[in-house]
Image 1 (spheres, rainbow, N blue to C red):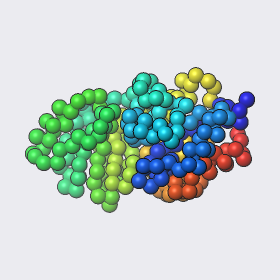
Image 2: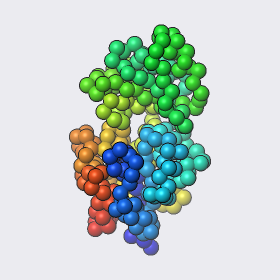
Image 3: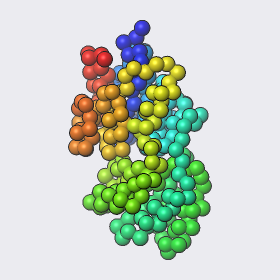
Image 4: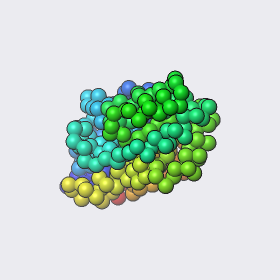
Length: 261
């Protein structure tokens, strides 16, 4: 029996697990994850990134629980190859895009299709833009906006008021809003993994830094905010740990090691 048998730990990727810039994961974090796994714990990431992006970090860590990607709209096997669960968007989301495009301070709108998110049209008439988006290849998992930070909350609130019965709206970075299907998100995906786990899960742990991590932090038995998290995440968390620049995931695993549940 390992100390962490029955634990399932999901961390946000950028600015939680990674160092600033997202290109590196500290040695202390990697060593701590390997120790956690060696003691029976299951560890993975919940991220807005795509599965193939996470595979670039195979030299740093090896997940032993499914990957939650595309902001909680796709769950794949640990190697990112097999889709276990997905929350897809249909053509109705084009109504949201049509609402967004005329906003004067909207810098861009793009679709997450599981491979690349960098499909956007910034020139042309509204109808030309709408034709472009309607023709984008499927599947569609999420739509992401980018606007000046000072307008992001205003846009998110307007979206919730007009389309809140169909979609979730999460800010994933200061200038961005992620639009995805109602009932999806990191928290919903973590709960799905818990329910469909091949071995019993008795404790879920989650860590994050931004608004799109809140559902996961609130769903977890123990939710952590990193010190560099926004205030809303800290308020939602059970515990606050060190910043991503100070080996936050290693500090969490040390905390769990000292205070097992």
